[in-house]
Image 1: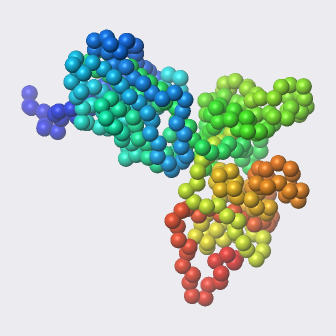
Image 2 (image 1 turned 180 degrees about the vertical axis):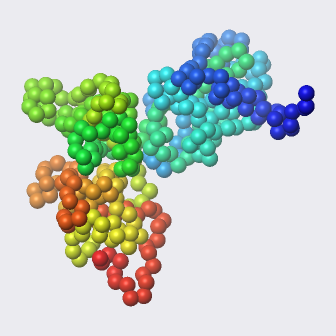
Image 3 (image 1 turned 30 degrees about the vertical axis):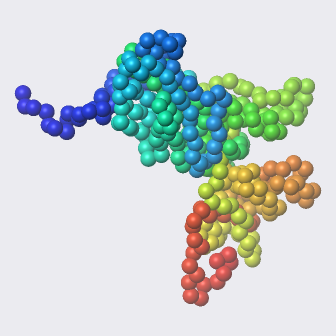
Length: 376
């Protein structure tokens, strides 16, 4: 038999790490990946490994840097430090896991979208804390820190939360037209992700009141009621987050509750000499070095940047909305929020427009003989 090619036989800790990862990827069914036998033992026992994580949650925003805290203890005399494996996974469903980061000795490996954004903090002996940079909306969720020696392992859980805002969403087709997968896509298209139950519950605690049921991240359908009324499940029912339970993801249709976070840029109302059709609005933002704002971007600007504008304008999905931080009688009611005027005819109806410009984007160069970039 011919000898194996050199590249087929990696050496040192990295070879062991690749072997561990290869077994995880090839021999473990996807549905069971990440399931572990966790041996909880007393710290003084021989061979024991004990993992400690901070209680509660850690909080950041999109684009930020966060440390997921995790420390471990074990009998140093019983095991070589290079034999300790550190592994971070993200819990995507009750029994489903996504690989994030693995370390064995001096070898390190990050996975998927975490490549280039993650590293161990390594602040002294026993520190397995994970640094995540340029945090994304998809990073939200629960993470497991697992530490393994030859005989024992233990895990700790860390929850990563994001500062942001919930917004209910339905497309031009109307209410209750989205199955679960379509709701996921709709949120992504509007600069968001499907919200979690915890996020919706927090929004309800802050006063959110919405009468239409929407999909959440876990496949359940819920809606928050702060002011019970007949058209929202009877006036005599208690306040709270109403829950329809887990629904069929393909055949059942509802709205969506989306979540978005900090903006890497600015939303603004573009001043023009006249009202615009949708296609004119798109071109006007483009001429200004920007793009028509998405619904999630307008909500983030309202909530985080305190954008307050009593003028209706086009958004990217063809809807007409405007953000109100300081309510006044002529601006649509007594409560703060993003007002929604629906989906008018794109060709014949004329409105202003909300644009979004990424941070660091320079305004377009003005060509010779060209009018003011805001004019159309």
